[in-house]
Length: 81
Image 1 (cartoon, rainbow, N blue to C red):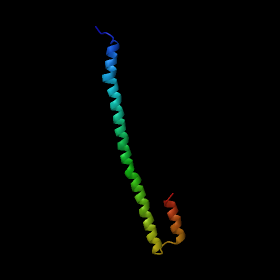
Image 2: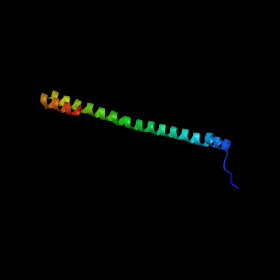
Image 3: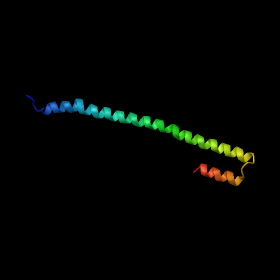
Image 4: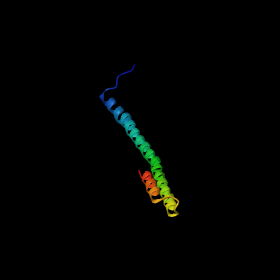
């Protein structure tokens, strides 16, 4: 026959089942957050690298006289927005 657990049994269930599940879930969510943050960081770095590369190319074109001062400054402003 099935009996409803009493106060002591409920406390043990809570201490040994519910709390560990909540703690493990929190740890897994924290790990998931850290992994996502780590994956997003290289995207930001690559974007900054791309902008720096484009600025370098623009400077080279400007130094070679291929683009004017006005064109150089206009393109630079677009990249830095």
